[in-house]
Image 1 (tube, helix red, strand yellow):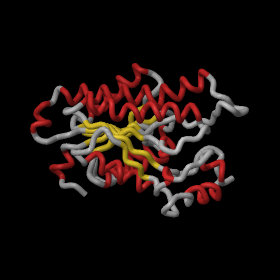
Image 2 (cartoon, helix red, strand yellow):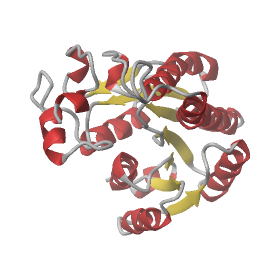
Image 3 (cartoon, helix red, strand yellow):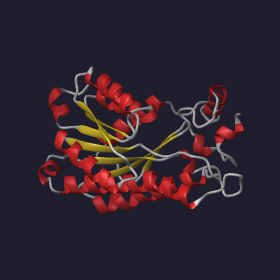
Image 4 (cartoon, helix red, strand yellow):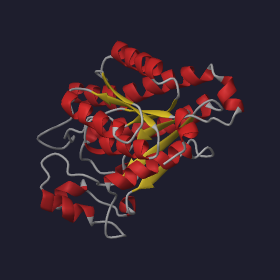
Length: 268
């Protein structure tokens, strides 16, 4: 764990931190001595439990509710977090929508589906990133001290290994991936922007546990990423001052194996 002096200088906001991967990322930052702002949408009880576990590690934590599809709610969220965590050093845009559609299927893409995915998976992370930039642009003293805050955008290994499944989701994440390089150039030298692309780490949708176990092993290394792998990578990126404008793939090499379908459909 970091020393108390270092800990006072660092806090992180993790969106969608009440459950699943976001929760593990929040807990890992806490294990490393970071204060943690836990964002949630509807999972209030899970968020409170995450905060309770973090506080037991001896660091500060608080839960914040916000609808990521609401621009005003996003601005209020960031303002509230900034007031409570004046040492905000990292933003992890983890929250996302993951719902099935495919152009050539019985569940084709609709305008509403695409809009919903774009609003939460793309627009919200970009707006929060802009707010993070404005927040740190004003603080030149921390820059002089070598303080390099960061935004981490959660992406997906399938962006290198494209297939037609989950079309709205894929398009939204592809646009977010493009933003990593664009924003890194625009926000420098005040703020680093990096991408983190997991492999299949947790069961999704209607996937069975058996199907997940099979899919998890379909990589060159014989296993994909675990939530712990992704969480540790996020903390690493938050502390890696020389990394910006690029994406780290943490997937056991899953992106190296071409697939005509999403891996979950190959294991049911």
